[in-house]
Length: 72
Image 1: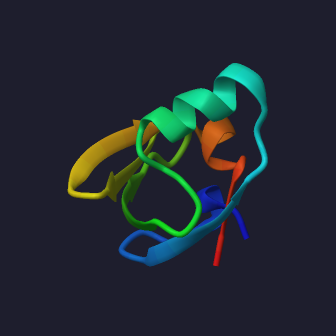
Image 2: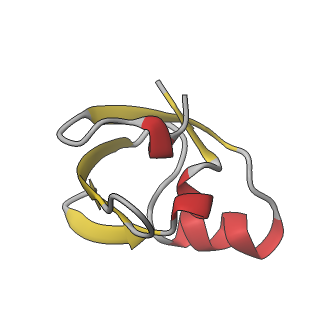
Image 3: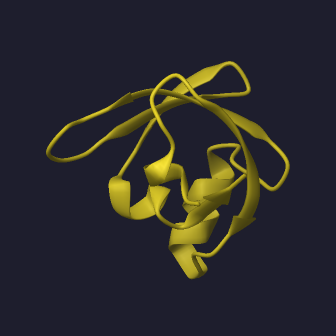
C-alpha cells in the first residue's frame, strides 16, 4: 500500500521509499524516512495535495510523491 492509498484519519508507518534521485532526497528532507509514523490529515478529492503530519510537522505532498512512499 502507498501513502496515497491511505485513508484520511489513519496513522501509517513508512516501510520503504521507492523514488530516486532528487525526488527521494526531497521526501527524506521532509523527515519522511523508513520507520516513521505518518498521520493522514486531508486528501484533496481531485488534485493535489495529500496533507500529512510527520514528527509534529504539518506537510503537503504531491500525489505523485505520495505514491513513492510504501506504508504498512
